[in-house]
Length: 480
Image (cartoon, rainbow, N blue to C red; front, side, top):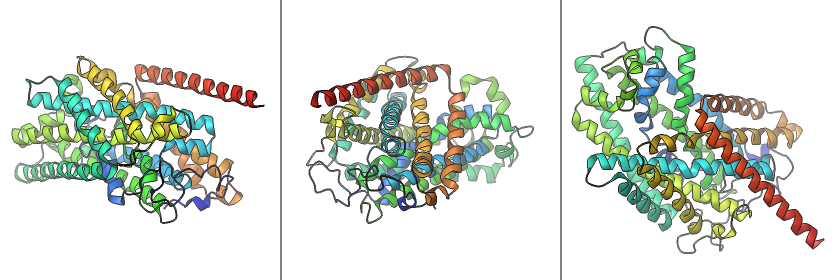
């Protein structure tokens, strides 16, 4: 288990790492977020954002790219993302603030790096919910074609935004019910698939989802892993609720968040491996055939369910994905609101976003700002034929860049700023370096368009940062 913040022993143990969250405050203070979230609530938010059946949409692509070893792809991806989960668990104990990776980079690397991390994470937290809302609108439009998908998309944004504004505990309770529904549907699929396999046998070898068709290919699996890790984006959102975890620093609040991050990743990894293993066994066509028909890859999971179990399960999974996607966006929107709130509190964004509503205890203006950006992006995409492709291509680079700065923050805090005792713990260097290598490899596999948009967003952020520094220097000179 990762060490506590006491392991750091570096400068700023009572300074740089002290954020507004460090106290035990049960949040009765004006302007403070309320510490009401339990361990279960935190895991619910993380799993909602990831979605228990996240592999459904990219199952066919991964099956084709990996030459049929799709389950091994998810097992390797879980291990790869464990490095990032470890770094989150380390830094949430050092700096349990609402800004997540923004706060960690600020503490471990400095103000400038913190802003860049928050800026890049903002691209992820604002656009991933937009993609999820669009998924929901597409699914609902398929069920009720008379209503255009952009209307369903906007309705999903409105409903989940109201729940987020109502309060974090209310949203968590509703989210728990939706998550339970998704897990029940997944359980129905698992039971139905097992029955089908027992009664009729598997169309292909039992080890094939692990070894692939015609021999194991390390290169093919690694190429698929670079896509599969994107299924896990969202477990990191748990860290953005650190200031709302019950107990505070003195009563184990940061430890609760760290355990929730690791638990969420482990649960997601098991769910992903089980469902892809069963689906791969039941697939009516081989991975080679699927690779030759790229137009059928997106619906491969649904086609497998339809052919092996029946249309009823196909429709049940579709409805579950429609509702689940909207509530994945709810968790993402909530995380985005906390990120904007934390950056505004540090005067990196307009100060009005740092206000906490006294009735609900949530950063209302930050949430509404996040909801507005997400609404515009989601509706724009819903009204275009290529909207989903356009939106999906840009959401990942921001998160991966932020993950890279997270790993650098662990090294910065424990090895560069830390004491000799902190530097004597090899995992504080080895694990972040491995995680950084994974991030670089995945970014290298991203599309040229995604890297271009990510690079442009980074340049804009650096211009904003330079303007802020110039403004502060000017203000300091006037005071002098």
